[in-house]
Image (cartoon, rainbow, N blue to C red; front, side, top):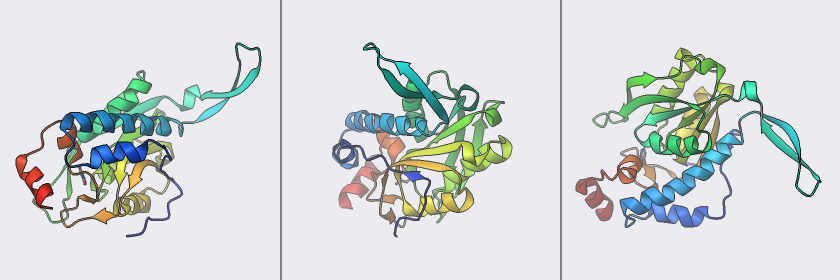
Length: 233
Ligand code: URA
């Protein structure tokens, strides 16, 4: 499936990404390596997302007494809320939180119903800051597959939280064209930062070539059944 036309998708051109992505896509990488290298990628993606938060010119004087045309976040517009889609999203949210420890944190628990053919998302729990409508939101989920979980989380943030889609950035490590298309169709104003855009989804709605189950690999809960399946391919 071709990549959808979406002016709001940013894929950072980081020179270390081919190396880092090889590490995390490799079936043979240990869980420890996966967590280490994916964290490096997620730090870059979190920096990129922060670059989309409203900022204004802020000139500073350097120690050589020259002027540098810097920028800074606009205080009243850039109070942040980092929202993770539990569980895999926690890893990405924590990478962002190291950069902005003062941010509020929201959590949404959505799981896909593995027994349904479409792997439909089911919402179990959410806890968002009461003033989320006054904040800029960075929504974190490493894998944008069908887009079901991301859309469910966006519905909660926009409809219940009252956040304008213009003030939301969705961050993921790998996106599928199908997921981007679904997200763009309902929320064209939401900006997306993706580490990579892959070819598409397989029958089980996993991203191809992808990297398997992100949460299981990051948190070392990979089942031998899944590994066997990956090896048999
Ligand atoms: N979630 C994952 O962890 N991997 C995929 O490929 C799709 C959704």
